[in-house]
Image (cartoon, rainbow, N blue to C red; front, side):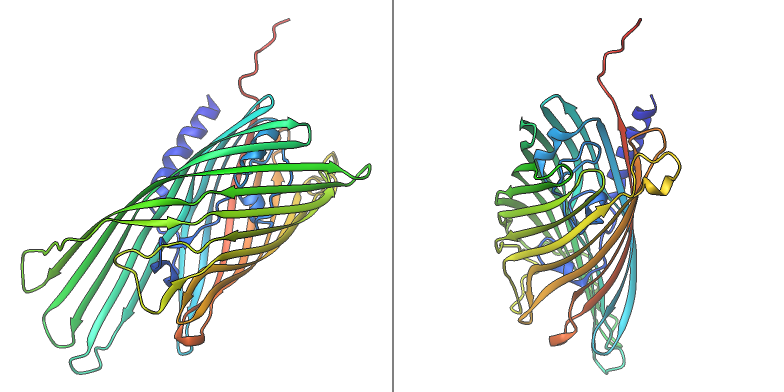
Length: 409
């Protein structure tokens, strides 16, 4: 009964919360918005390094990992973030709180399955261009919200004790709404343009994981993951309202197809199981076709995405009976991402440092995870905006044995 209440409550809260604004970045104006981290907090705290075949932590980055689950695992996470947006001349602050993911993994012998809901991207910006001090100056306000989420179902299979394969199917969906308001100083007239894009599409992901013991204590871990390119269908609507005319104008706009490129992710690491691990992750993605009818610009183009990350964890003594903090998992990582966006001939990059800890719930395999993320996105060069951000993340991972037949003596 308790697990049914937990799952029902988390499902309800998460579906409501996914409608919230998940970013405050002005760069979320472009394409389908600001790309979100698509894994659980345990691996986010290691900058996305997810190479170990873990039996109690759900790894939704690679579907091959599901075959290694030892218990049914339910994981849900959220975050609170603040950011300072600055140019050469001024700065402002923004903050937001969001749910980040919800997923359920179920072991089935040599098989393992997982289902979940994860944000793919978020749009959330508000830009004001105030020229009220200028006679007949044009005052503008631009605002956007929404994003794309994905529901996924995946299946993993253990070919050998140390080798897994897996695949998942993802249904992407969401809405992006943008609005611009323009008026002239000292003139009682303004116009409002609202654009709505409803997005949907399907894509597929395959992966494999392999580990090998090289000494009595040391293991090497590898992970390979490939996401196929896909199409995101955008059904578009535009509404224009002029204050002097009571009737809105609905111009015809064409529906569009956005191209999501294929992506290859490779990871490798070395470590002592349940003691420590150090690893790296490399990710490469083609240049997609993200521009929609309302956000294309001459000074913007898209390039190939790439990510380089190193990270790991350390557990002092996971079997300790006398020291709780010896059983805590301490995590850290560093990442550098080339986001695939070029504005004013400047590539937009993201550099970040992550730290975190996993606190076990005594008497169970469940745990509470806390993570901190510090980073910088963008630049003040070429008249652009630099974001200095700080995220505080929390997640809960509940583990239990389901579908076990009870024995009566």
